[in-house]
Amino acid sequence: MPEVQATLGLDVSDRYSNYCLIDVEGQIVEEGRLRTSQEALLKRFEGSPCRVVMEAGAHSPWMSRLFTAMSYEVIVANPRRVQLIAQSTRKNDRADAETLARLGRVDLRLLGPIRHRDAQVQADLATIRGRKALVDARTLLINHVRGAVKSNGGRLPACDAHSFHKKARAHLPASLRCSLEPLLQAVEELTTRIKELDRLVLELIESRYPEAKCLQQVAGVGPLISLCFILTIGDPTRFKKSRQVGPYLGLVPSQRESGQSAPELRISKAGNSFLRQLLVSGAHYILGYRGPDCDLRRWGLKRSAGSKVAKKRAVVGVARRLAILLHRLWVTGEVYEPLRHLEVAA
Picture 1 (spheres, rainbow, N blue to C red):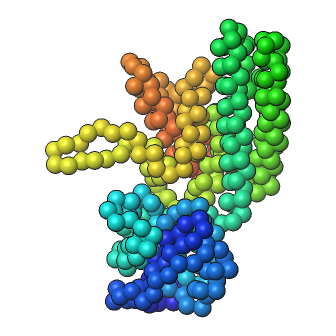
Picture 2: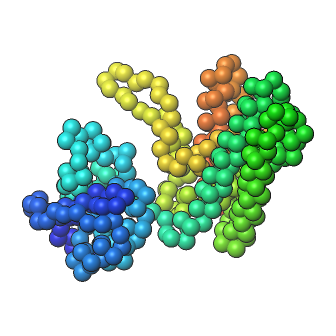
Picture 3: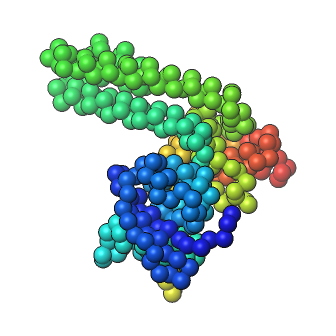
């Protein structure tokens, strides 16, 4: 990487982006505005590599790859860490670009730099996110149908989402059949598409990510959770210890200590929200009536007794320990022992 002679702050918007270039002494060399496109960025910045600082967003993945290909030193800032921009009393795109450039000169650790995935991993992760969008749309339609029937004095039978379109048709009131039948057809179509993406997830595991099978040794972890975990983490060696995965995924309490005050806060909810949601779902399965006996289940049940608050905390705790366990299995490739603590004690 060539020696950095200048710092470029880039405030990215959907159509246009503002930039601010400052030299090593902190003087503004150039400010401007250009279209948010590859052609415009190549035309203006190709051939003059320096350090470029931008916030993480919808356009930052392809932009970071583009600047890296042009031999730039790319810093993608975590928006949670750049409160100097979010809380500014004079916030505008031009000032934001200058602020990013100046922060990039001081200390990069203040920006909490993140590392984007490569293009192939991002494309594979889009499969999982697309499946989630279909599931959310199906859930919205199912809830609407159930609510419409209930408000008409009827009630639909309890069933899972995959068979809803089959079992609900026979119980639709005659007065609502014309208005709700198109929704049931949409639910059926969504269910078919979801099954197709489920098969695609299995194909991805077989062809590109066979290490996901090692993670599926844990009860409650299926193809979706294991593949999403691997695609989201990317490189397991980025963490020196498996315990660092919990804070990375926002499964540890936030801290706001000041003097003698140390209040108990909720979890930080940093990192990937969908993976965190999947881990919590896995924790619910482990603590549920279908969950097999294991160390995680015993640990969670011991801490869930007493109140609903204790149960919620136990679920989050199991999700955090599940993330740590999955990372450990991924790194070592060990055979999972559900009751390892019991065997060690014996």
